[in-house]
Image 1 (cartoon, rainbow over the protein chains, first blue to last red):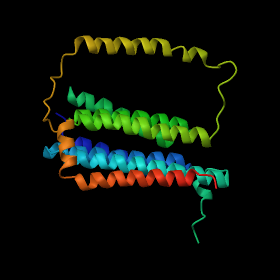
Image 2 (image 1 turned 90 degrees about the vertical axis):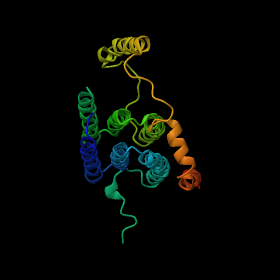
Image 3 (image 1 turned 120 degrees about the vertical axis):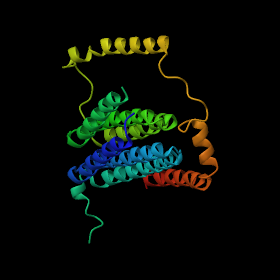
Image 4 (image 1 turned 180 degrees about the horizontal axis):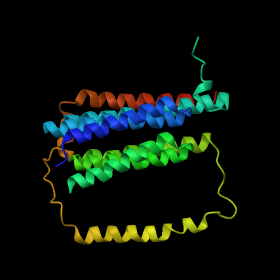
Length: 100
Length: 162
């Protein structure tokens, strides 16, 4: 049996890679996908914790995270499409609209 | 055996995550993310969370990734698939790969040994999760429906051309 700490280490690695993607990339779509990666890393940690304690509560939480992620992706992609319609470019470096 | 499986899946998951972050073409990134999400679903299976593994494949690798690929296709026009195919020889590899996959699936269906079926009350089963969602987590569960409704209305409002 693989100890849970391995799963937690893997989750940490994935989360770090996701955060790296958010910081490094300029395409908002790729940034979005990196956020999904980080969310999944957190989900993996939740399931691993639930497995350690032999309860299904962690899995229920992952279920809610999935629902929130679905809503978030729909709204986020709609916002990106609207921005693209106005600006005709797709780079977060251009998006300083809300900065004063 | 379990350690070996974990090692292989972990390698695939980390590799595809790096591919997502490092590849320039967003479509490649999206395909890497599909591999990554499938790998995480496999990890859920090794942790005994069957329901979540299925939900992961359906919700993430299915619905969410279709949205992503759709947005990428709409926003970043690539080369259209017309004219002679410059990589025809590579694409013909799809035939042996498909045959191998079919043989593998048939083999699994015929042998079907190995893993004993789990009872309905196992901690990762649908029954346990469903009972939990409709008792302890009933209020968050109902809030989720409200959230999805709000997201749906918001997306329609955003996507509407004024």
